[in-house]
Image 1 (cartoon, rainbow, N blue to C red):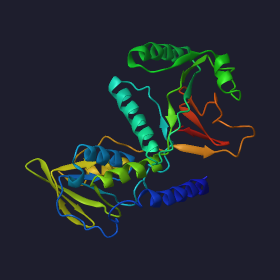
Image 2 (image 1 turned 180 degrees about the horizontal axis):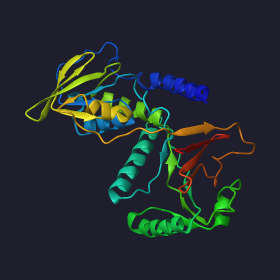
Image 3 (image 1 turned 90 degrees about the horizontal axis):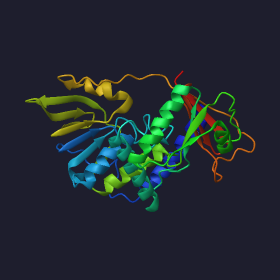
Image 4 (image 1 turned 60 degrees about the vertical axis):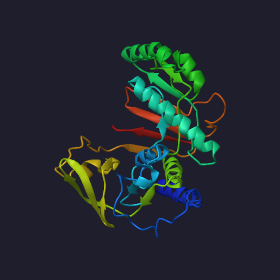
Length: 302
């Protein structure tokens, strides 16, 4: 399993070289600035997104991204990449739809995101879960989300390998999909750099200084940089970064274990054929299955 992940990572690193080949300045020779308006800590997909959207607003040349390791080298590169449009609030739904539109736009420009609109099949093993699905179906009308309630037989039609004996029904959301978080991160960061954002790898934060209750500077491995705004996009390390601030900023984040396993190739499994399902979600088991090529990935926090 580790070898497979490492192989995928190395393959993505090769794509990274192509992705950054058209940038104006090499990260290795770019001079570290002593001043910026915005400093973003973390060059994962979240940091890349913040940098990209700031650049779109005209803040590119005033923005600096610092990363303790490599771009997308934290939790981004091995994330599952599931993208579901159904969220608890309308604001989150609009945000997800905006993200999907961005991925499609990047793909049209020849920048890889790995986006595949394959749909998702949500399974219910209890009456309470089916009630939730019916509420989601009702809510989908006002939120403009295409979805369909399915019987156990229809769920099995979507995926013949499914054992539907304990399934009461399902919710099919055709607009859901999967992407490659690492490639998405590289593509978005490349676009941000083209709009003036400066990115520095192998640069860790040591201290965040405040003056009159406002951020005034950030001390890093490469030197001190004065700034007006500091954005914590450190993901897994966000809580630790918050503790580097004076006074300390408490980030309500706690990491937990998340297991996953890859199966061997499954005969006759071709999830990308028309009508086939690539993502299953079973909420009662707190798990989901992602079909990739001819094998299967099962993920569960249990």
